[in-house]
Image (cartoon, rainbow, N blue to C red; front, side):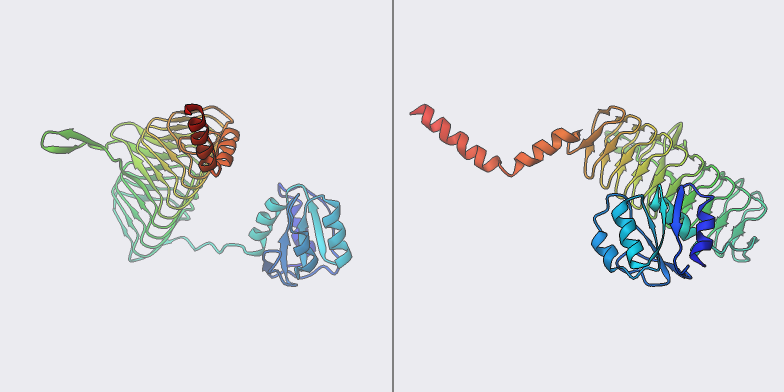
Length: 347
C-alpha cells in the first residue's frame, strides 16, 4: 500500500490527520517499531517521546508523528515520508488495520461441531471444528466461534462476537454485541461460595449469571464467576487483560481497563473508566469510584474516591505512597539514629 493511500484512509479516522509530506511515497508492506523498521515499513512516535536519537537512525520508510517541531525537522532532513497527527498512537492502530486486514471466515457450521437442536445460530456466523453449543443457547449474527469453544445451555451471544479457541461460556452467560473472549477464558464459572458447617464446607449453589455488555474484551486465561443469586456485570467497552480473576457479584462501569493478574473479590464495585494496573487486588465489597487508577500491586480494601490515584498495600494516595517509598531505604539509618538518641537521653 502506498503511503499516500494510507493517508487517505487515515483522513476518515479519529486520529486527526493535520498535514503530511509523502516524499517518494513509499510502498508499505507492514509496520514495526522505530528501532526495527525497514524501508517498506511504517512506524510512529508520540509527543514528548525521548526516542529522537532512534529517529536519527531509523530505517522506516514512513512515520506518524505528533506536532513536535524537532521530530518533524529530523524526519524532513532525513527525507522520510511522514504525517503529523493529533494522536499518532491511535493513527498507528488505524494504520495496522489497513495494512493487515483480517480475513473473515465464510459462514458455516463445521461438520465436527456439536450443536444442540434447540440452539439457534444466527446468519453469517462461522462455527469452527469441535465447537459444542448446548440447548437453548443463542448465537447472534456474524459471530466467529473458533475451534474447541464450549457453550453450555442457556447462553446468549450477541451479534458480531468472537470467541477464540477453547473459551468456555457457562450456563446463563449473556454477551452483548461485539464482545471478544480470548483463548481459555472462562465466563460464568461457579463463584467461590461455601458455607462452613460442623461437618465441613457446604457448597452454596451459584444460580446467578454473568453479563458482558457491548464491546467487552476478555483476555486469555481470565475467569469471570457467576454469583449465587443476581449477576456479575462487566460494563460496556471494558477491556480485561490475560490472567484476570473477577469474583462473583462484581460490577464494573463502562470503559474499565484491568491489566494482567488483577484479582477482584466478590461483591466489589468499580465505577466507569477505572484502571487497575498489573497484580492489583480488590477486596470483598470494596468500592472504586469513577476514573480512579490503582498502580501495580496495589491492594484496595475499602473505598477509593472518584478520580483518585492510589498505590501500595494497603492502597493510599499515590503522592503519599511516593513519599513513603522514598523513605523506605532510609529506615535502617533512621532507626539507628533513634536508638542513639534514646541512649543519649537515658544517660
